[in-house]
View (tube, rainbow, N blue to C red):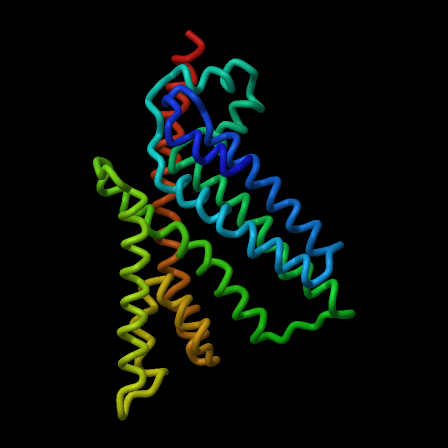
Amino acid sequence: YLLLEIAASKIAPLSENHAARKRMLCILVAMAAVLIVWFGSDDTIQSWFFMMLPLLGLVMLEALCERTVELPSLYGTFARRGKLWRLAGRFLYPGWATGIVFITMLAALMFIVPWLISLKRVTGINFSSSDIEKAFLIIPLIYTAILAPVAALLWFPRVKQPLWIYLLIQLLFVLLYMVAAIVAESPGITKDGAYPWLALFPSCALMALMDHDTKEMVSFYTLITLPVCGVILAYLYYRMIKEFRVIARFEKASME
Protein backbone atom coordinates (compact mmCIF):
# COMPACT_ATOMS: atom_id res chain seq x y z
CA TYR A 1 0.00 0.00 0.00
CA LEU A 2 2.85 2.36 0.81
CA LEU A 3 4.46 1.66 -2.58
CA LEU A 4 1.13 2.37 -4.29
CA GLU A 5 0.86 5.69 -2.44
CA ILE A 6 4.40 6.61 -3.48
CA ALA A 7 3.57 5.82 -7.10
CA ALA A 8 0.20 7.63 -6.99
CA SER A 9 1.82 10.78 -5.60
CA LYS A 10 4.00 11.02 -8.73
CA ILE A 11 1.02 11.42 -11.04
CA ALA A 12 -1.60 12.97 -8.74
CA PRO A 13 -2.60 16.65 -9.03
CA LEU A 14 -1.23 19.08 -6.43
CA SER A 15 -4.66 19.34 -4.78
CA GLU A 16 -4.39 15.72 -3.53
CA ASN A 17 -2.45 15.32 -0.29
CA HIS A 18 -0.71 11.96 -0.71
CA ALA A 19 2.03 13.10 1.67
CA ALA A 20 -0.38 12.67 4.60
CA ARG A 21 -1.08 9.02 3.76
CA LYS A 22 2.58 8.19 3.18
CA ARG A 23 3.74 9.82 6.38
CA MET A 24 1.02 8.24 8.53
CA LEU A 25 1.92 4.84 7.10
CA CYS A 26 5.59 5.42 7.93
CA ILE A 27 4.75 6.37 11.51
CA LEU A 28 2.67 3.18 11.82
CA VAL A 29 5.61 1.19 10.41
CA ALA A 30 7.94 2.77 12.97
CA MET A 31 5.51 2.02 15.80
CA ALA A 32 5.23 -1.58 14.58
CA ALA A 33 9.04 -1.78 14.54
CA VAL A 34 9.13 -0.79 18.22
CA LEU A 35 6.60 -3.54 19.07
CA ILE A 36 8.41 -6.14 16.97
CA VAL A 37 11.73 -5.33 18.66
CA TRP A 38 10.14 -5.95 22.04
CA PHE A 39 8.04 -9.03 21.24
CA GLY A 40 9.84 -10.57 18.23
CA SER A 41 12.88 -12.78 17.81
CA ASP A 42 16.22 -11.53 16.47
CA ASP A 43 15.46 -12.96 13.00
CA THR A 44 12.10 -11.18 12.94
CA ILE A 45 13.72 -7.88 13.92
CA GLN A 46 16.37 -8.13 11.19
CA SER A 47 13.84 -9.12 8.51
CA TRP A 48 11.55 -6.22 9.43
CA PHE A 49 14.30 -3.63 9.28
CA PHE A 50 15.82 -4.89 6.02
CA MET A 51 12.35 -4.83 4.46
CA MET A 52 11.09 -1.50 5.79
CA LEU A 53 14.10 0.80 6.07
CA PRO A 54 14.34 1.40 2.27
CA LEU A 55 10.68 2.44 2.18
CA LEU A 56 11.08 4.70 5.21
CA GLY A 57 14.20 6.20 3.66
CA LEU A 58 12.42 6.92 0.38
CA VAL A 59 9.50 8.70 2.07
CA MET A 60 11.92 10.66 4.27
CA LEU A 61 13.88 11.81 1.22
CA GLU A 62 10.71 12.90 -0.55
CA ALA A 63 9.50 14.74 2.55
CA LEU A 64 12.70 16.77 2.82
CA CYS A 65 12.81 17.63 -0.88
CA GLU A 66 9.17 18.65 -1.36
CA ARG A 67 8.13 22.25 -1.81
CA THR A 68 5.24 23.82 0.06
CA VAL A 69 2.16 23.60 -2.17
CA GLU A 70 0.80 27.08 -2.84
CA LEU A 71 -2.78 25.92 -3.26
CA PRO A 72 -5.24 26.90 -0.49
CA SER A 73 -7.69 24.12 -1.35
CA LEU A 74 -5.13 21.48 -0.28
CA TYR A 75 -5.18 22.83 3.28
CA GLY A 76 -8.96 23.14 3.61
CA THR A 77 -9.54 19.48 4.63
CA PHE A 78 -7.45 19.94 7.77
CA ALA A 79 -8.09 23.63 8.45
CA ARG A 80 -11.88 23.32 8.61
CA ARG A 81 -11.78 20.54 11.23
CA GLY A 82 -10.34 22.57 14.07
CA LYS A 83 -7.06 23.24 15.86
CA LEU A 84 -6.06 19.61 16.39
CA TRP A 85 -6.31 18.87 12.68
CA ARG A 86 -4.37 22.02 11.83
CA LEU A 87 -1.72 20.90 14.31
CA ALA A 88 -1.62 17.47 12.62
CA GLY A 89 -1.14 19.28 9.34
CA ARG A 90 2.20 20.56 10.59
CA PHE A 91 3.64 17.13 9.78
CA LEU A 92 1.10 15.84 7.23
CA TYR A 93 1.03 18.65 4.67
CA PRO A 94 3.47 18.25 1.76
CA GLY A 95 6.61 20.35 2.02
CA TRP A 96 10.10 20.35 3.49
CA ALA A 97 9.08 22.25 6.67
CA THR A 98 6.43 19.71 7.64
CA GLY A 99 8.89 17.03 6.50
CA ILE A 100 11.32 18.11 9.22
CA VAL A 101 8.61 17.70 11.86
CA PHE A 102 7.67 14.30 10.39
CA ILE A 103 11.29 13.09 10.44
CA THR A 104 11.75 14.36 13.99
CA MET A 105 8.77 12.25 15.08
CA LEU A 106 10.07 9.25 13.13
CA ALA A 107 13.56 9.67 14.61
CA ALA A 108 12.12 9.77 18.13
CA LEU A 109 10.46 6.41 17.51
CA MET A 110 13.54 4.88 15.88
CA PHE A 111 15.86 5.99 18.69
CA ILE A 112 13.71 3.98 21.10
CA VAL A 113 14.71 0.76 19.29
CA PRO A 114 18.38 0.43 20.45
CA TRP A 115 17.30 1.14 24.02
CA LEU A 116 14.61 -1.57 23.83
CA ILE A 117 17.09 -4.09 22.39
CA SER A 118 19.49 -3.41 25.26
CA LEU A 119 16.69 -3.59 27.82
CA LYS A 120 15.43 -6.85 26.37
CA ARG A 121 18.82 -8.59 26.30
CA VAL A 122 20.54 -7.20 29.39
CA THR A 123 19.42 -7.21 32.99
CA GLY A 124 20.56 -4.22 34.98
CA ILE A 125 22.10 -2.12 32.18
CA ASN A 126 25.09 -0.09 33.28
CA PHE A 127 26.42 2.28 30.66
CA SER A 128 29.93 3.64 31.09
CA SER A 129 30.59 7.38 30.91
CA SER A 130 32.27 6.90 27.51
CA ASP A 131 29.18 5.12 26.15
CA ILE A 132 26.95 7.96 27.34
CA GLU A 133 29.28 10.58 25.83
CA LYS A 134 29.36 8.73 22.52
CA ALA A 135 25.55 8.36 22.40
CA PHE A 136 25.20 12.05 23.23
CA LEU A 137 27.29 12.76 20.13
CA ILE A 138 26.06 10.08 17.68
CA ILE A 139 22.32 10.75 18.03
CA PRO A 140 22.41 14.46 17.07
CA LEU A 141 24.96 13.65 14.34
CA ILE A 142 22.58 11.18 12.68
CA TYR A 143 19.68 13.61 12.94
CA THR A 144 21.70 16.55 11.60
CA ALA A 145 23.30 14.46 8.83
CA ILE A 146 19.81 13.68 7.50
CA LEU A 147 18.64 17.30 7.62
CA ALA A 148 21.82 19.22 6.74
CA PRO A 149 21.42 19.13 2.91
CA VAL A 150 18.03 20.83 3.28
CA ALA A 151 19.81 23.94 4.57
CA ALA A 152 21.72 24.08 1.28
CA LEU A 153 18.59 23.42 -0.80
CA LEU A 154 16.85 26.42 0.78
CA TRP A 155 19.37 28.70 -0.92
CA PHE A 156 18.29 27.35 -4.33
CA PRO A 157 14.46 27.38 -4.25
CA ARG A 158 14.13 27.18 -8.03
CA VAL A 159 16.03 23.91 -8.42
CA LYS A 160 13.86 21.55 -10.48
CA GLN A 161 15.22 18.27 -9.07
CA PRO A 162 15.89 18.90 -5.34
CA LEU A 163 16.00 15.16 -4.60
CA TRP A 164 19.04 14.70 -6.85
CA ILE A 165 20.73 17.76 -5.35
CA TYR A 166 20.14 16.30 -1.87
CA LEU A 167 21.75 13.02 -2.91
CA LEU A 168 24.67 14.81 -4.57
CA ILE A 169 25.34 16.78 -1.39
CA GLN A 170 25.38 13.57 0.63
CA LEU A 171 27.70 12.03 -1.98
CA LEU A 172 30.02 15.02 -1.57
CA PHE A 173 30.23 14.30 2.16
CA VAL A 174 31.11 10.66 1.38
CA LEU A 175 33.87 11.81 -0.97
CA LEU A 176 35.26 14.16 1.69
CA TYR A 177 35.40 11.28 4.14
CA MET A 178 37.10 9.06 1.54
CA VAL A 179 39.78 11.75 1.07
CA ALA A 180 40.38 11.77 4.83
CA ALA A 181 40.51 7.95 4.89
CA ILE A 182 43.10 7.93 2.08
CA VAL A 183 45.18 10.55 3.88
CA ALA A 184 44.96 8.50 7.09
CA GLU A 185 46.63 5.57 5.31
CA SER A 186 49.52 7.71 4.07
CA PRO A 187 52.95 7.14 5.67
CA GLY A 188 53.58 9.35 8.66
CA ILE A 189 49.90 10.31 9.07
CA THR A 190 47.82 8.97 11.95
CA LYS A 191 44.06 8.62 11.91
CA ASP A 192 43.82 11.12 14.73
CA GLY A 193 45.63 13.58 12.48
CA ALA A 194 43.61 12.87 9.31
CA TYR A 195 40.05 13.12 10.63
CA PRO A 196 39.78 16.24 12.85
CA TRP A 197 39.06 18.61 9.92
CA LEU A 198 35.86 16.63 9.24
CA ALA A 199 34.41 18.07 12.45
CA LEU A 200 32.81 20.90 10.46
CA PHE A 201 30.68 18.41 8.49
CA PRO A 202 28.30 16.34 10.67
CA SER A 203 27.83 13.64 8.01
CA CYS A 204 31.61 13.18 7.65
CA ALA A 205 32.12 13.22 11.40
CA LEU A 206 29.49 10.49 11.74
CA MET A 207 31.29 8.29 9.19
CA ALA A 208 34.61 8.88 10.92
CA LEU A 209 33.18 7.85 14.29
CA MET A 210 31.68 4.70 12.79
CA ASP A 211 35.12 3.74 11.48
CA HIS A 212 37.43 5.06 14.17
CA ASP A 213 36.00 6.21 17.50
CA THR A 214 38.88 6.88 19.85
CA LYS A 215 38.15 8.74 23.08
CA GLU A 216 40.12 11.74 21.79
CA MET A 217 38.09 11.89 18.57
CA VAL A 218 34.79 11.64 20.45
CA SER A 219 35.85 14.49 22.73
CA PHE A 220 37.04 16.64 19.82
CA TYR A 221 33.89 16.13 17.76
CA THR A 222 31.75 16.79 20.83
CA LEU A 223 33.52 20.12 21.28
CA ILE A 224 33.43 21.17 17.59
CA THR A 225 30.72 19.23 15.72
CA LEU A 226 27.88 19.57 18.23
CA PRO A 227 27.94 23.41 17.98
CA VAL A 228 27.97 23.05 14.18
CA CYS A 229 24.91 20.81 14.45
CA GLY A 230 23.27 23.42 16.65
CA VAL A 231 23.88 26.18 14.09
CA ILE A 232 22.51 24.07 11.21
CA LEU A 233 19.41 23.01 13.15
CA ALA A 234 18.78 26.55 14.45
CA TYR A 235 18.83 27.87 10.87
CA LEU A 236 16.49 25.11 9.67
CA TYR A 237 14.05 25.67 12.53
CA TYR A 238 14.09 29.43 11.87
CA ARG A 239 13.24 28.87 8.20
CA MET A 240 10.69 26.22 9.19
CA ILE A 241 8.81 28.67 11.44
CA LYS A 242 8.72 31.21 8.59
CA GLU A 243 7.33 28.49 6.29
CA PHE A 244 4.65 27.61 8.84
CA ARG A 245 3.49 31.23 8.72
CA VAL A 246 3.03 30.85 4.96
CA ILE A 247 1.09 27.63 5.54
CA ALA A 248 -1.12 29.41 8.12
CA ARG A 249 -2.03 32.00 5.47
CA PHE A 250 -3.03 29.23 3.06
CA GLU A 251 -5.14 27.61 5.79
CA LYS A 252 -6.88 30.92 6.43
CA ALA A 253 -7.48 31.41 2.69
CA SER A 254 -8.97 27.92 2.40
CA MET A 255 -11.69 28.80 4.94
CA GLU A 256 -12.77 32.05 3.26
